[in-house]
Length: 219
Ligand SMILES: Cc1cc2nc3c(=O)[nH]c(=O)nc-3n(C[C@H](O)[C@H](O)[C@H](O)COP(=O)(O)OP(=O)(O)OC[C@H]3O[C@@H](n4cnc5c(N)ncnc54)[C@H](O)[C@@H]3O)c2cc1C
View 1 (cartoon, protein in one colour):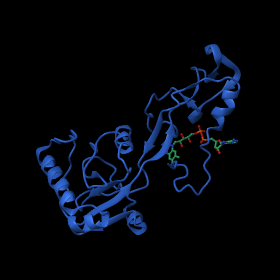
View 2 (cartoon, helix red, strand yellow; view 1 turned 60 degrees about the horizontal axis):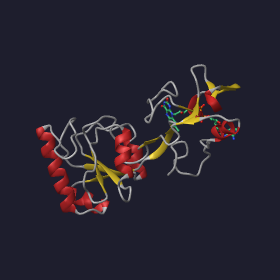
View 3 (cartoon, helix red, strand yellow; view 1 turned 90 degrees about the vertical axis):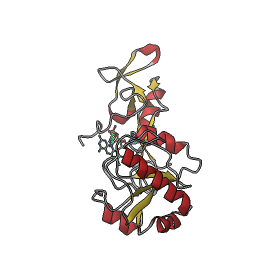
């Protein structure tokens, strides 16, 4: 998996954990080291709101309540055997500003019919049509009988359809060095290590298992 600091794997990535390793050598304790935030940032997603798109797996079936937070969606993604998922919306939704760039780069594509979209996604047209028909019934009812989604802004039934493959990248390490309220790094016997302070992503324990969004920079 790549990190969002270096999404193509070709650039420089400073997210190396060196700060944690250095402090550990002085006896620092760590906390929540297994808690990593994954986000879908650079693929087929076009909407900055919930209710106008669906996510389907490589067989053309939905696999999650798309209105959930990134933690729940990320966990569902990790359970997909091939970790392939597609985002689908249609002409009615309010696209984000990067629509043109994503269309130009081919990250997002368009199709005039469900059959054409299925062909381009290499999924069964029958399965994809059934997925959309079922979802559109749920949108009409306001109730998702498969995954419990409750937020619907539209049906997905007006061509052209917009679709793109999405993926999760590693975005944030929620775990890190154990600190106290004075940002002193905690060492063995749970005592502060003299003159060692830590702030930022090198620290852990602030977020629990899911990051408090937007708190690292003034967004
Ligand atoms: C694409 C992207 C978008 C983001 N958007 C937001 C946002 O909108 N809002 C928000 O709040 N947060 C956002 N974040 C998260 C936020 O940017 C980081 O959590 C924050 O910058 C961490 O700051 P830091 O000073 O702790 O660490 P860093 O900014 O990672 O600084 C660590 C520094 O140490 C250097 N370094 C590493 N190893 C060594 C070594 N061995 N020797 C010397 N130097 C070393 C690195 O090069 C780096 O300069 C985003 C992150 C990414 C990747």
